[in-house]
Image 1 (cartoon, rainbow, N blue to C red):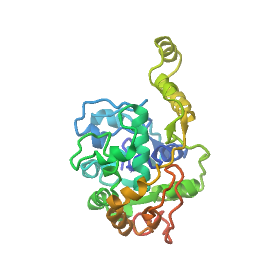
Image 2: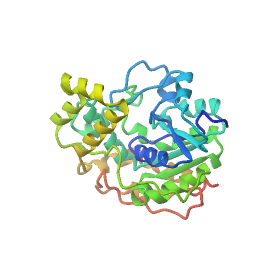
Image 3: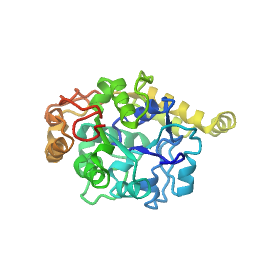
Length: 324
């Protein structure tokens, strides 16, 4: 594959640590990551969506030339990539990536489906896109044909059919799958396994001390509203003195400070588990990982999951898929 187009993708899942993973990967001198973390080109861009994203600094790239321009800064890096979590649950993204970049490598990171859904719910509350304050009510209000791309919390947590699409279009040795629990337990080991998968120097150690774009509940909704829409004089001064990249970095740093851990409400996990149990079992078989911790009916904190037991892994980062 020639320089100037990506040769790997972090496809999701959303709310499973993709932003932290993007930040760690881009530190490597042999890795080039798109300066736009989530272009969403092969999902929302090619689907013709006209709505604009509502989160700070986000874009949707809709044109191939504009997309390729994101990688104009490549200067001989071995691994060229981007991280759009919408690529995992979008039904057309795998086919589109295969059509345009058939030799690409695919990286996915999966989180306990109920915790992932709850984290997504908290994010939509933060953005003002979710009006309900009750997570269970919001999930139960979802219909099987829910077309609102911002609200199908549990539907986006059904991983087996999403992974099957990538296995249909890409050989297993080009797909690497991790768990969010792995990232929380030992981020350096996880990232190094990705470096090996991508064929870059795996002794490089990124700074994994910071968690990027923390999930949880807002400490102050009023302060968050101020961050999203500051007074006109502040907007004018910041846009005059600061680049878009710096403004976005400042926003997320202050936003993360305004977040606090939010535990899954008592009893909700037990009620929702039957809705995802079959998919957990199917995903467990598909990726050959022990996901029994996800089947625990007890109440667990959404921001602090107990690491799942794992089976012995190959050098690719997990058994079965992604071995090199």
